[in-house]
Length: 396
Image (cartoon, rainbow, N blue to C red):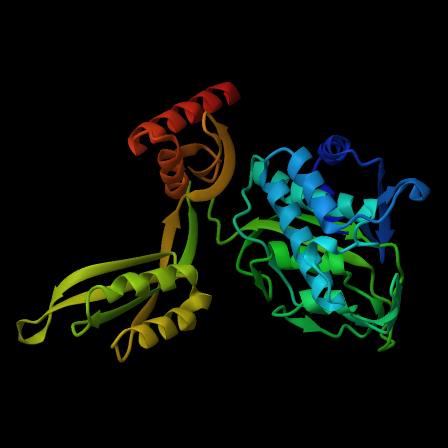
C-alpha cells in the first residue's frame, strides 16, 4: 500500500524493476489504478513462481542487499528495515538473529516491498520540487482478531508486529482483521521520525495506495476504504513571498555561573543527541562582577520540555527562559555521493526552487578519510569538493 501511494506521488516503478533485477529476484510487478470507497488509488502487487522460492534467513537477505544493491539512501532504509524485522523475530522465537528464517517476510514479495519503500522515499528526495527532510505518521490502527501464519493461528497484532510497535502510539480502529503486518511495522519503525497528527505544512502532493482486503467494521459504522494516504509537503513554506522556507523554533536560554566549564561539553552533546537544532555558549558578566555563561538552545517547539529536562538535570540552573521565534532558512538535505574516496554523505543547501547554493561534505566522514588515507584533512576536503563540482557540471 505504501509503494502504491509512493507511485501515486511520482515514484517511477521502473527504478524498482531495475533494482530487483540487479538483486536477482524473479518477480513481476503489477501496477493498476482502482477505486476504494469512491477514491482512486494505486494498487501495487507482486507475482512470482512460489514453487521455485524457498524461505531465506536474515544473513542471506542482508548479503544479497549489501552485495548487489547500489549505494543509496534507499539501500540504507532496506537494510535497516530487515535488521529490525530480524531482531523482532529473533526475540519472539528465542533464536539467533542470523538464523531467523522469515517465511512470509522473507518471501519475494516482501523483499520487493521493503526495497521498493526504500527506493520510493529516495525518489521523493530527487524530485525537483521537494526534498524530504523528515517522515511523520499518524497513530497506527492495529485491528483485532486472529491471523493465520507459518506458526499457526496468532492474535492480531502478531507477536513480531507487537514487538516492533513498542514505543509507537497505536489505536483500536474498530476493524476486524490484521491492519499492520510485521513488514509494515518494521517500515514504520525504520523510517518514521515522529508519530502524531498532521504538522503545519503546505501540501504539495497526495497519493493513495490501495489494499486488497475489505475489512469488517466492528462498530457497524460502515466499512472504511482500505487505503493508505501519503502527503508530501513543506512545513510553513512561503514560496509566493520569498525564496526561503519559513518555520517556527523554540529558543531556550539560561545563565550559569557556578559550574565547572568542562561540564558544558557533556551537556551540549546530550542536547544535540536529543535533537537540538543548535546549542551555543555566550560569556557574560553577571551580578557582583562574576563571570558566567549563557546557554542557548534552538529546537523545534515540540521538544522544549525534553531540552529543559536535560538542562535542569545536568547543570545547576534552577530555571530556563523560552520564546518562540520565526525563522527563514534554506532547504537542507543529505545525499550519499560517490567521490574519489568512495561514497561520502554530503549536505546540500538550496532555495525553494531547489537552486543549490552550498554543498558541504560531512565533517566526521572527511576526518575519517583523512585518518585512513594519511592525507591532510584540508586536502581531502578540497578533493571531495572538486568531485562535487564535476558532478554539478555534468548535471547542468
